Image (cartoon, rainbow over all chains, first blue to last red; front, top):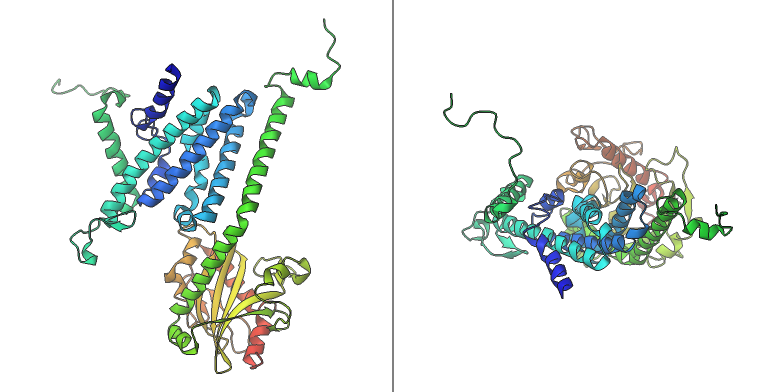
Length: 221
Length: 264
């Protein structure tokens, strides 16, 4: 019984309280690049979650046979192979989607989130726990991507998953699409706002200031 | 002190995981398993991907034809479809024993390829197939539009395109890039309509019949040139060389000559 609760916590902790993107600030590059629409964000989330979960399972299964000296190489080989397979599957069955994601699927290989979880967790835990942790982190990453992707598509095009939600002025409606939302800086701003929102709701996530100001605080002069 | 175990295998198993033989073995096994995984995924999924690519190419050829001014009217006039012909490149006429459906099988046989000298091989192909599938549109027995698939080595990988030539066999009617892996934002811009729209109306040959077409450095300055892409000199040069190769004597030259003589 205790074990199940443990697994449940492993699965749910990375969703908000230990979220890999907003707390650990991992995997940002792809999070910013593919969130211009909800559909690409969903595909990227699914691909990353599958890769991460499988990689964690494989690494954790062979964890006793990974020599310390070449452990990073072995992890990257496993991750890269899984990514290539996923990329090939996308190219075969989801052509449009794989074109929209272009290089970002292959770049899952270098996504620090994946290597981070296999190195930090999967290498030291049994396959079930490792895959649960990976799934939780994948879902946490997905959550952030979906939120940002939805906001950017909604404000940038007035649509969600291609369906018109806010009829745009061009099409005779009232909404003026903010094309800025589709540019990369908007991804940064939204992510920043999201981190801020999460940390004001959960103050324990805020980091301590790294430096104290050398200037005396007010009016000491 | 114990004598070393005479059984080599047991002695190997007793080594710690960190020892050099076991490290090398682990690396080898992981690489081998991953290689098998990746290769089988590629091989199993290739037919589906090829079908996708073919469907996409068809759609692009259709879009190319529709994008040529006056072409859609012409198409509806003649019944709305292009004819597909497999041509024998060397002889410049329709191949007798190869049809579009058997073309792939024919080209799987290396005896149906001609290897190219470095001096001939402008497009970096290495070898050229002896048969190619072209699309043409006839207007009262005369060829009024010829669509030629062309390919060659770009900066990052193979570039494939379809070039449309008007009935005078000299004026370009349009171009579409069907496959490329050039740098996004630089060479990758060859996929953009804005660049492709500078092709229609350009002339391929000069008065002596030499291929003069080129992608300019900067803006086009003659009837044979299209605008270059800033920051993508290698890709621009590759397009020049691909067009020059395929329209020259080792490419579709004999076919173009035959059509100009009215023999096709």
